[in-house]
Image (cartoon, rainbow, N blue to C red; front, side, top):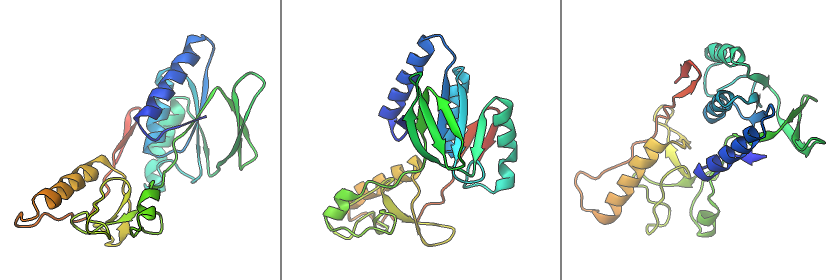
Length: 220
């Protein structure tokens, strides 16, 4: 049972897949989470010849999208042999007699596989910020101002762990995307190293644009 959170995790997943395929027998995988990463992971597993099942707590794939917009993606996934278990969650994992893993679902179903990969959403690792006495939001996002400064004027924070302003709704949110993180890093560096810059550079919020692919379909 592996997690997908960073590049080191990807290396471990690839190593596990390579080892399975080297045995020459049919391989099966369960992907928990049908977000952008989960679906792209499922596609890559299918391309490697692995029988793939996707489990998602919500009753649709890609929960950020309107449900009817995901229908073509569901059809494409199933056309490529991906089994979908929607509206249910994984409640536990146990080793099975053949050396694989049994995934137990809240629906009562049991899925046998050689490999399970968790591609579910993550919360920011902000324990250090909390220990330092910084303000954090209800989901753990580090609160920053438009210059990416935290509640301590000597500490700046950027990236997936910070709480930003939603440019659509106006309220606080968390958007773990590379583009916003890159921009935030540049703004923080300017604020720290060139505070006299005029006009001052501000982070105006995050729109949260995301684009993901699934075989011959693209969702944005």
